[in-house]
Length: 270
Figure 1 (spheres, rainbow, N blue to C red):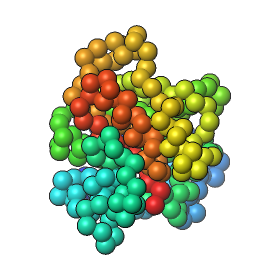
Figure 2 (figure 1 turned 90 degrees about the vertical axis):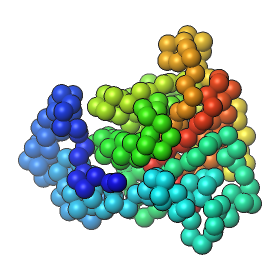
Figure 3 (figure 1 turned 120 degrees about the vertical axis):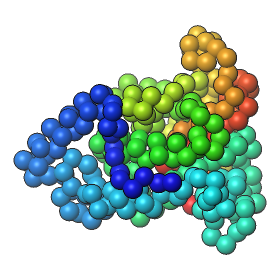
Figure 4 (figure 1 turned 30 degrees about the vertical axis):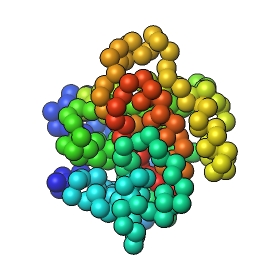
């Protein structure tokens, strides 16, 4: 069942209170300077790039991940079904997600939601990170109720040098918030070798690049995070495009001994 109230921080978390205080302080400063503008409606929104009304709209329009709503998703890629039964047309024509055991994108990458992702990734609107982390956590709780308690997250790793160049990575930051505030276990079991940005590649090139780009982390990291491979994990990424990245990462994780790999993404490209 969905929470009726959208709460970005848990009431009983000291770190949550501390981060909330920092955001409140920044919010006051933003208001003094004129206020941030909502990316959806253009109204003054305060600290977050969404006003309260659009924030609620964003959370309410997420595609549910509960077992009761499973029939609304493609059983392969997890995208919303329109008229198809069980499997969407794209997955019937070309199966790319061969190693995942369930994929759960939360929003379609279009209209004003596309603007949110652009602001987050390209304009460094990091105030969206706790918003996305809260949404991920709501979905995470539903997935744990379906597939097992306290499932660890495995973030899709950034390209080499990205954090050094830009100072942060979006997927890494969302997982950081989920671990810091809600104590969700995070296992960094994967690394990326290629520096080529996937968004610049076509469908076929992306598929070939993904197969060679993602590998298991070194033995030292594997021993640190998971000396004994967990039975199930949730792979986390920001956008599901062709599925090549998720499939390659899931294949590597299963080669390490993980039996079930579920994937959770914020957006999916239709």
